Image (tube, rainbow, N blue to C red):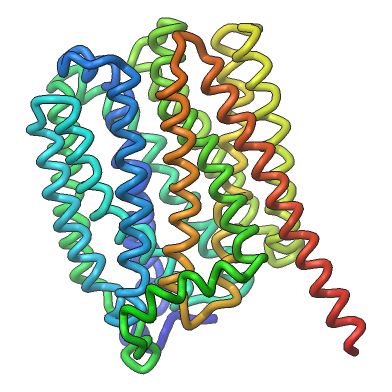
Length: 413
């Protein structure tokens, strides 16, 4: 399916790449807002006179704001379009990022992270909805995979850049950098045309639009897709929250090298996302989702064992985590495209609900590793292990429901 008609006033290829770049940047806000300051967590804990577990809650607080924000922005965008809410969210992101940079205590930093996340959530949830506005079917899954592969650059360079900023300018400069990124993105947004034309917008009152979330909970297939994403992101953010401590404090990895180790998994995401984009039309997104979930589950079990026993040292943690993180390219895009496929007129609300599951799992995962921090890597291994197994169970549920649907159609014919 080509770009919407409102985009055809420019050459299609050139316009398509410009849209792709902007959407990738918007989707990257979820990762860069956290990944950039990961190497600074131990330093921030010392500077703010807080323990590492407390500073790790800056990730949980961000995810809380992110999840709640998505539920707010989704219905609003279905009624009023995408561009305006994204712009409002970016302004809120700028305010939150500046507040983080100026925080004098861990509690203040946690609070400003919520504000930052409320703004960033608009960018991510509405970028997914924009994809649904412009594409459908296998092409939507392919586009989502392309976006994930491109936006993987953010977490790839984030810890590397964050480590360098920390070394030369201190941790506060990291958040001022996010202010600059937000301003640049806001300027780029002004060049993007609205993807949801007035004729396709919801005319429902916002109160009823919010009530539709309850109706969406009756769709088992949607919940299975969202559950797969939620379980997977629970494990992923458990890793994100705990890995600086596990790698830097326990295994004495220099903060600057942490970015390289973290970035290895992101390279894996780019590879699997590219592979997914090439295979999805031939193999199907549900089957690729199941393949990815199977790989994630196996890797997570290995990680749980090595984290508990200490076998393999740093490599014993890093190798299975590389495999787990790399499966993002097979899980995230296919789960999102599958969730959105049956709801073209509710793309904003469905994307928001999907994102709430996704980052709600992240809240739980990151909070658990912070709450049960015991000076070892075991809490990280346990959370990732449970998340990987949950992802596989949800992916198998998707396959079972899809098979049942196909059987019903066959019998009807």
